[in-house]
Structures are given as structure tokens and as C-alpha cells.
Length: 310
Picture 1 (cartoon, rainbow, N blue to C red):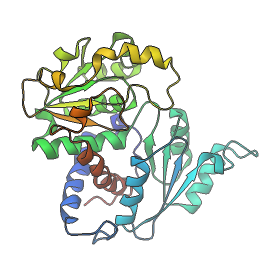
Picture 2: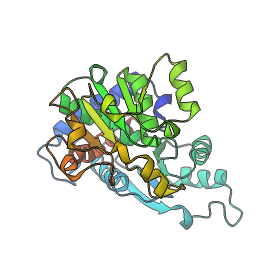
Picture 3: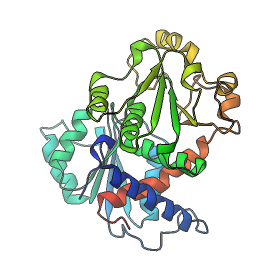
Picture 4: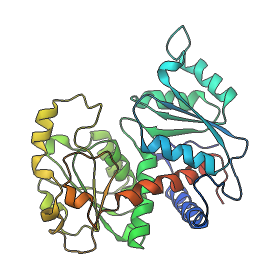
């Protein structure tokens, strides 16, 4: 049994095994319908419990489909539907109940501590669907998309992030260390990643390049990533934050500053004003392929947790 909580805690060789498995599984599904099962049905008889404390579209739908195609079953619950923290039931007791009824547990939470506490008390695999400091399933599937489109290992590519330094970027930074690729980040100085993230990078003898000017950051970029500047649950002065990022909008003019005509654009969605319509819907954008690939990679993440990778 393995957990999938933070990319920094998973060996690079295991992350590569997940990506390789996802590539094979995607290829084998070319002639199958959406709800046709994978031929090996590796999760047959398994029940995966999903719990959401925050809104979700792509993660919820893609994992539901992932589990179904692997032959497993899933139930989705909301945190406020449980006795968790209410009626005298502790998190440890809830974890024991979940371990009794289910074979795996997945959590989208507003607390890093909560998912760590669950993983310590569960006797079944735990998968992080999103937490304040990490979005591992999103970013590993993004790596898959980059390599699929560029037809190269990500270690040979220059990656650029423009925008807010959030949980998605934290996980992207982790993969830059694991897969040893160059990562440029353009954002205002006051929004750079927390110290614990950068201390870990330094400890692993890697470097992330920061730029105040996005035009400098994108110069050699093979891939430009972004995310919504103001997320749904951001507890900040939203007007000020939007103003602080006004010079970091990704538009056709900025895309032309790259030295390569083949530069692609990725966005984990939902989008906001951080990207122009012509870039988001243009030829360089691979956002729909990126969203689709969540299903394929998440299947292999599940199999990794259950010790069933081929």
C-alpha cells in the first residue's frame, strides 16, 4: 500500500513508472467507449471513497471515470455529511470507519494537516485530490501532457510558470527537482513560494529561476503554464491581487516573446483574466488535451497506490 500526497515524497523512478503505465493504458483505449472497462480490470471489487471539502469539476469527474474504467466502484461524500469533528467522533475514528468500508480514500481539503492526519490513521491508500500546498495529481498529468505533445522527456525542456505561486506551482517545483528540468517563474516578489518549498529545493541541490518581468521568463520556454490569479477560496484582497498581477497576463504579444514557434500553453482550469481568449483558444493551447489526460494518469496513480502497476 502506498499513498500519493506530495510529489516531493515520491521517488522519481516511481513517478516515471506511473507516466509509462499511463502512456500504455491510454494507447490501449483508442477503440474503447467511455465506460468500457480496461481489459485487465485491475480494481475489480475495490471501493474508493472520495471526500470533498472544496468545489471540484475536473478532479471529481476524471477520478470517477478513472475508477470506473479500472473496474472499481466509487462513492463521493461531502465532509459536512459525516460525523467528522461533530458528535464527538474524532478524525482517527472516522479514518477507522473509512478503512473498514473502503479500499482507498481520496481527499480534497482546505488543510494540509488534515490529509496528513488521515494518512496516519487510515489502513488504506490515501490520495491527495488538492490541498493548500499541493496538487500532485494535476501536475503529474501535466507532465504527461507536456511529454506527449513535445515528444521529449521533460528533462530536455524549458518550462515557464507565469502567475500566482500556489499549490499547483509547488507541485510543479517538486517535479522540476524530481525530473531535473529548468523552471522559470514570473510573478511579483511578494507572491513567491513559501520558504519551506524553496528550502527543500535548495536541500536537493536544484534551482528555480524567478523573474519580475514575464518577457524575460518566457524567452526560451517550450511550455508556458498558468493558473487563475484569484482562486475561489482565496482569503485575500482580491482587487489588490488582480492589480498586482496586471502585467503578468498571457496574451499573443507575450507568446511571441518566446524564441520558439512550438511553445505550448497549459492551464489547469478554471481560467480567469490571466490569459487572453486568443491564446487560450489558439493553436498553441493544449488545455483540453491536458484536461483529458487527467483520467489516464490518475488511473496509473491508483494502480501505484494499490501495488498494481504493470
